[in-house]
Length: 490
Image (cartoon, rainbow, N blue to C red):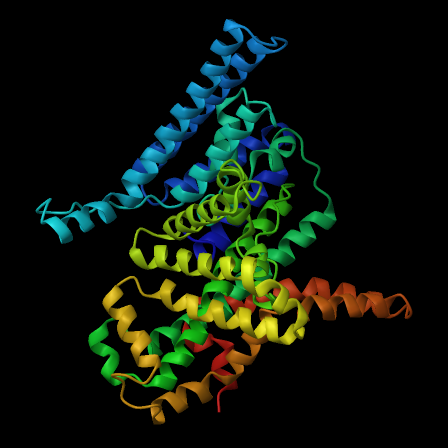
């Protein structure tokens, strides 16, 4: 079950909200937990058992860490203090080993065995291991929780089912954002829901759904049409088609991922949870460093706080700073997928971040802002080529094809038709990835202060926008024949 399915929108989510708001407030957490477990278990009960076990491990270890910390409180030194400190570290290591070990087994076993088989011929057969949905997200959430308890930044959750609620909330357990426990700790026990929160949540969910159903899905279809799935298909592609296909893929990857974050933030707000923003218009960035401050913010801050800074951050010798950045970006790539192209993608950004740190930053600051923006978009665009193709043979063929090697020419009639038919989609995407929409809304609000009639119009727009977006998204999800972009073709 996914957020953009009609089953989820009109049955699961509606049922959840109706029961949530009609039941006594003291049982609302239980309602959320029940729906979250149903949602996660939809793909198979065995994955639900894994989630229950991993939460149990983190719950138990965090309690033992807090217990050791309390026994050590007030001790300034001595043998007992060292013993309690050792116990804290022991439970932290146990949690990290078990959680990261399970993540490695399910996500990376095939990758490592596949490489062993390729280079050394063993094992003879590589087992097929199905990746549990959302395991990367809830593993990192649980790790951040236990580490924060170890650091004394939060108190351990004494009730297992409440920690399970935090890790399994269907709003964000399968596609993020990576929510820190300290962000929602108070709201798990006590939440205040205002009509403004509900209205904002509905509007934010509708915007995210429209981004997914109307824009991301349409861009994905165009990208799949223009980009070859295998190197052998490259001979029927054109150079212009490959460049255009990657442009649509660039829109797809942002609109799709940010749409899920929008929907998660919206659903959380409807029931009183305030999740932090996960995207801040990354395609408006003026450098690669700026891009990663805006893109998948929850993942970037996780690696910063739990890997980069513990390694010494930038307060160590320069060669160690480079080492720390190398580790972080190799892990960032590997987190996205168990394939060499993702590792190369992470290292690709590492190279540009190093270049900016030591060579490019001051030069970019002296140039017009537009130059930095073009530079950042170009680097990100080329990076998505690495991200798109897991097969390195296909990746190499596409890179060659974009230089005019091995294709059916620069362009042809079919490529031109695809471009013309999707020109309005391209224009809508260009607007959707910028701050134009929020700028226009703020402008109308400012105008409203000087005209007493406009506020009523703004209220009408705010009320109608979610309904219109929901209607258009439903039409698009029902079938391509109802996709509104079909009516804007030449």
